[in-house]
Amino acid sequence: MKSAVIVFPGSNRERDVADAIERTTGTRPHMVWHKESDLPKVDLIVLPGGFAYGDYLRCGAIAAHSNVIREVKRRAEQGTAVLGICNGFQVLIEAGLLPGALLRNRSLRFVCKEVGLEVDNADSAFTHRYQRGQRVVFLAAHGDGNYFVDDDGRRELEDQERIVFRYCDAKGQVTPEANPNGSVANIAGITNRAGNVLGLMPHPENLVEPALGGTDGRAMFEGLAEALS
Image (cartoon, rainbow, N blue to C red; front, side, top):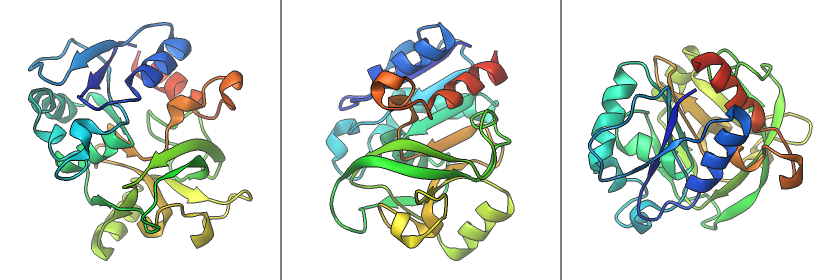
């Protein structure tokens, strides 16, 4: 699987995700600076976490207008897989590749902890190594992860099975108490209509090795390599 990681001024998880991809696929991603107007031919594009442009104006709003995002949108429309994690999810929404908005956490505090996620859709290239209903643990690290969409938008996401991950408790139950940021319907990750663009707030790349505390994120990258190679 050939991949590219987009780097913005303020990105801080680009090395983490590049390392996760290399550890799980054996191939180092291309690191692409945001000012580039073209991308190499790749199977996967990743927008990493961090604070693109210092989160000035609105999280992801400035990054969404970077030169390279025009090419990311074009590739996404052609069917290339695109993964946006945390700040990358925010950029995908601001760029119009995913619906909704990401608001300040309900607590108005930065959340940094492991969170339980229920796999709501295991039929995508991103999740086919998981089982529907499976509980996994990823790392949350965000201040603006409160996903909002109106009732019609939520029903559309549910009807089209585009909700991929929901926050859940230790027993795998999707409860208000398990929601770390106030997201509508405990939503942690969604896809576009075509299913080739995934945005999620928690970080799978930080749990790919036992030495890092767990391996629940590993199946995402191994599954992508299997599906896209």
